[in-house]
Amino acid sequence: MESITISDNAVKHIKSNLESRGSGIGIRFGVNTSGCNGLAYVLEFMDATFDDDVIIEKDGVSVAVDPKSLIYLAGTHIDYVREGLNEGFKFTNPNQSGQCGCGETFNV
Image (tube, rainbow, N blue to C red; front, side, top):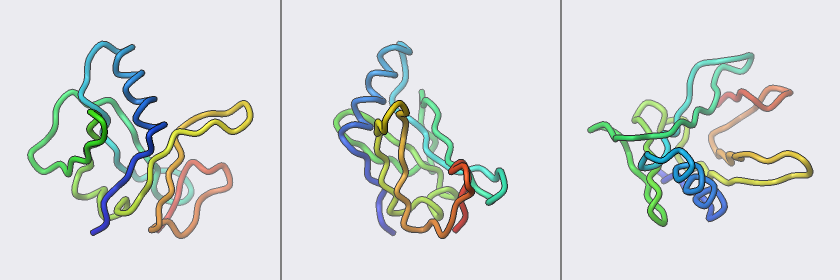
């Protein structure tokens, strides 16, 4: 199964937010059932890992993914981008077959 990758920009943004927060070892990346297309990406701060987590590390930042989400996320690249006045995480997921018009949910 392909690994999840994370850009240097995303690592810098996560590190900055963890420093502002004052605690945490990284982020938890997963999917939840949601919206008009069925799945939505979920990112949250992580203070500890679980035994069955798959851990991706880059430059001192850990990204944990639960095995159930990994099925949908294998091969995904996480980036942090600024496009005009907007900025945020951008996910390039080779498993994604479509997304809703607002870009908030996707399907595989």
